[in-house]
Image (cartoon, rainbow, N blue to C red):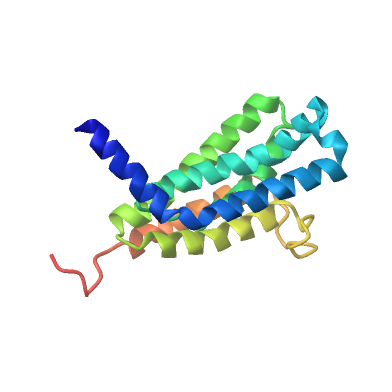
Length: 190
């Protein structure tokens, strides 16, 4: 019985994806052309640099894939990575070094996740709306954290407190405000 189910599964998958063979062929041709044009790419050192370049993006994509597989969506992944980079870079220069930077990043991720979870689970707001709004908040936090040193940010921000304090201050204001705004909406039933 298990064998028939497996054969049926692969038959359905083959039929569903039968047009993708040409896409894989085009991908293989591009890879061969790239290896011919840049012969050094197949060296161990070049492969190591190549992996270092795409590995962080692959980790973020894997995390977003897990969110989507569970039926959710998170539009704030890019701004969260960007803010995390700013917070990590600014705190790793402190007295605790890399350990302090990792702790700051874990605290940032945990607090942002808790806030989003509270809005979605307790406030019953749609995850797509919460994470879309959060993406703008995180982008603004990043801009205020780096004093306009990022290309997409204004040159000078009016507030010039340390990089970690500003986002935390903002999140504390958001959490105190959210306590008054999370309530049953008129269109929801009991």
